Image (cartoon, rainbow, N blue to C red; front, side, top):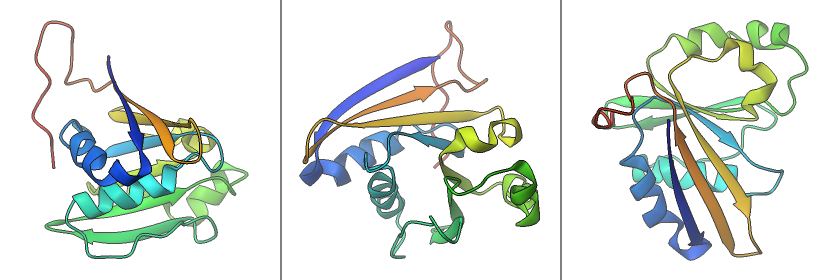
Length: 154
């Protein structure tokens, strides 16, 4: 496991997103943080850094939004409103998990039992109105103490 830490001003979010993108080795990214910490805001910056021209929005009520990036898709989930695993099965979560596309998941703890093993976690903390702390945890099976990190999949 490896952890990278970033502290940034919201004006610098696009450059931080580009930096973080270079360290993503899994296609399933779990986003942790309190309500209003900036999870969706950072996802918007990541989508932009990945080359999408789509306008990223919060999927709080739709549960999932789809964005087109060059040669792939990003599925952005917000599981905050889910109350059971059955609800996830009702909207076809297994199809998304097996799609081999990028999965950005907010509130992943609500469906932890369904998530793939090869994930990375972004934890965002609001320091004040304009400053954020971000920690990227890499727990990919492709990474061990004695080897270099694999090349990013993006």
